[in-house]
Image (cartoon, rainbow, N blue to C red; front, top):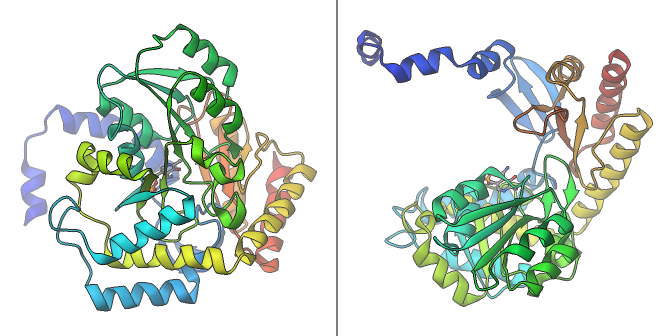
Length: 399
Ligand code: PMP
């Protein structure tokens, strides 16, 4: 009934836009994105009846299969039910939010923390909660989309600097009004490139020019630093970074996000970011799984050790095959092919041989950097490596 009503509606310009968009047509033709897995078991997924090794997961430590994480999710569901009824600012706050926030703040070396139902919201709030019209946000040009959206909403002016370039940032800072409030937005680990942010140089400049520093460490948490405390801890710079934001959907094996900093800053953000005021609070099961993963991270350092052992092994294989990994230094490792066609061809060969990866092409990456994005996990086993290796050898030999 609903369907027939919809079809009989007269077409309008937005319908025309949707049906003629070339990118949407390309996506449907090649079925590259929005794949649905019928089954998932550890590092394996089944898509359209085909079993594949997942080589594109952001869940670097593979903790979503951990018995403690699963048990915590079940217990929270039984104790609290499935939802939170509303926003934290109104009726959605629960005891488990406070617990998770305190543990996360401690772990990150900050006084306070606020959790959101998505990392995207948290990273937007890391800007909208602090920057205002008249301020200037200085941002690495390869920054995640959530931060760009936060900048737009904040109404601050924006200055982009070349990826990870302290010299470009310095030249921008030189000509800005010393009295203007400035916010530097950078990432700990840039996940498309696998690069570690040059925090020592960038944070030093920020200090010289009295910039507020916001670090998106979605991909550094669980990966870098002692016990996976993240990129700020890795460089011993936690105190010089005002805000650390990130996602619970990567190493913390859940969904959601966080912003951590001094108590005064977090209180200010809670009353100035629409993402915390108007969006429903993270659900009990999501929060409990992240909290359990956070504890596993600290109690079982072997996951982080396994992640790095697998990363070294995988990187050595890619180097041996002569593949361009954009000088990745982390478990997020792109294979740069250079054109959309080559990236598609390489991706397809891996798929045929049972390996799930993701394509990223311009404008998502700079021109000439079209790539297949891969990420290794602590969970990849000897058997997974055999499949990955033979698929990569096959794909590389066909290029
Ligand atoms: N920041 C970065 C750097 C990310 O890579 C992502 C997700 N890919 C996010 C923020 C948003 O996190 P989430 O997916 O949990 O919404």
